[in-house]
Amino acid sequence: MLLGLFLAYALIDIVPSILGAVVLYTLFKPAYLFFINKWKLKKSLAAVLIILLTLLIIVLPFIALSWMLIEKITVYLQNPELITKTINDINKFIGNKIDNPNFISDSIKDIGNYALGMLQSAVSFALNLFLIVSIMYFILFYMFVKWEVFEGTLSKYVPFRQKNIEHFSVELKNSTFSNVVGQGMIAFAQGASLTLGFFIFGISDGVFWGVIGMFLSFLPVIGSVAIWVPAGVIALANGHTIAGIGILLWGLIIITNIDNVLRLIINKKFGNIHPMITIIGVVIGLPIFGILGLVYGPLLISFFLILIKLYEGAFVEDLTPEKERVVQLKEIQNKPKE
Image (cartoon, rainbow, N blue to C red):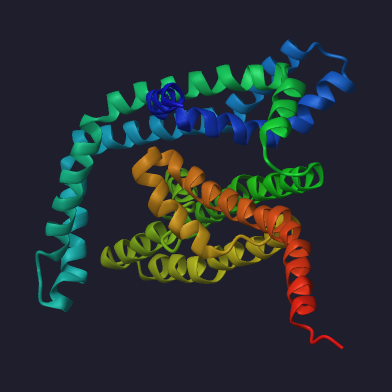
């Protein structure tokens, strides 16, 4: 037990890799079985194909986002007057209205200091992320190649009946799809609609801000609002009244309703994920897992709630007959003798 606890403590840094491997295994197992059953591929080749597919779908967008951010930051560093002009325009539009002419300047300064600290740790973060992803794919490869052994071992050591294990597997799959695929669809739809709105109303850098909005959509409450509201305010501050009002109405009517409609469809398809699960999951996930906590935090809470439901079905119901028997014995003992 002591050795096991020591190993668990030593491996705590690769928990994100293990969680990532489990998530990808759950999402792509149907595709893996299709490759080996229909295409008759070897298990190792099918696993490599799944890894390449996930790299294309998941990892490359993060690389593209990082490249776009670096490029945008470089432009502003080379042309600081762009930032100064934007700050002055917003100060004139908002600062004077709230009797604090330097409100925006002070806010931008605080954000800048925070961003500088983030940039200073960007290299170490990139190396750490590369390590996490590498270990994740190493684990995922063997999970697929030895999937019968993997699932058989879980079934052997999980303290539930086979029926409940199958139920847990279904719930786990639905929860994973709802949290990852469902939220990914919502984020993509919001980012695409945000880009379209920027193009319609003539606001520059629509693709860049659409991608940023897509990732911000994983944040509960805030989401893409953090993009289209400031964009509208900046447009109004620069005297572009039609563009400013247009993008604000577009965000309020189109982007917000896209979120609501897709969320209803996804909840009906895979199961309802309460907003509180997402909010609390993000709050606990970000400090522990960094940006990956946007996905891992809500997933962990969902898995925990599934285990509670499974415990109720596997143990509480099993104890009911015993409780009834005790009650019956007490009734017999207390029954007056004839």
